[in-house]
Length: 184
Image (cartoon, rainbow, N blue to C red; front, top):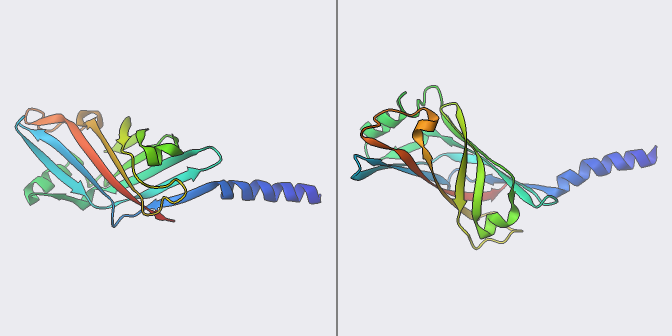
């Protein structure tokens, strides 16, 4: 019986010891986007409320990123443009207030050396597979708190049912994220 209790305790403690959690610092992280307008200029904005976690599974040698962006935190060059992108034809913030991203497990080396980050992105209740490119950084794998993860990618807005003004706006939306990690 004592061996059974020891085995149960070991099974409960080992996963806790091999998984570490970092949080996304919402005050220092941001996401930017840009989309071409009339093939001449760019419309851009940034989201200033990003929160989520990076779960590190050291035994498996992987990490998983989960992030949410509060759409109401968008900043744009004009109030008119801000109202336009929050309206039902684009983000429809009233019914879909957040963008959600969950990565597939990625090798720990990607957090410092950079590389592709695959996952699922949900916008307007529509989930699609996406790929972002993470830039290398100077962080050490054992001390990720304070580290800035920079990611870039693009999506087709029509994949997420954002079809408004297709004659004036490009379907391709460029995304950039600067995620600052903090200890959980």
